[in-house]
Length: 152
Image 1 (spheres, rainbow, N blue to C red):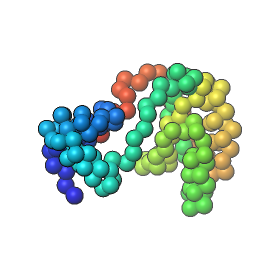
Image 2: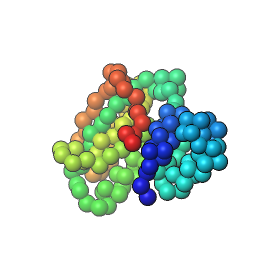
Image 3: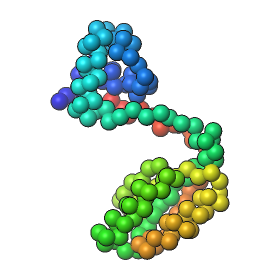
Image 4: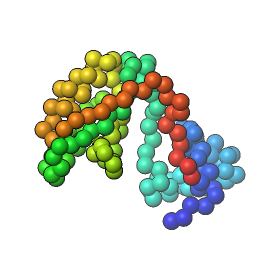
């Protein structure tokens, strides 16, 4: 299904504020509340909208260190990749993970309480995995732009 201009505007509005009611969306989109609600529901059913989440403040939760970790595997078999993927899914400190082209096999985004916690994650968890050959970590000094809405 192709998105029309109204669908695009609806998606942009929901990315800014997912709490918008059908009434509020109707005002923004010049539709009736029922039309706005049906459009939202259709976009959810078609998978354009995958869910709604709360954006939390890491510092207020005691997560003082944000970092990115490049992981380089020494062994590239399917079993090792699946085992590493299971490890990544079980660690709450790892908030995002990507497989990559280039030198590193994976890029992990992590949040830790402090530097010792990051050190433990790297040495006791990641480097302890049998497939991991080495890691390269980078600590975020400041985030210039928050995770923003997708371009529509």
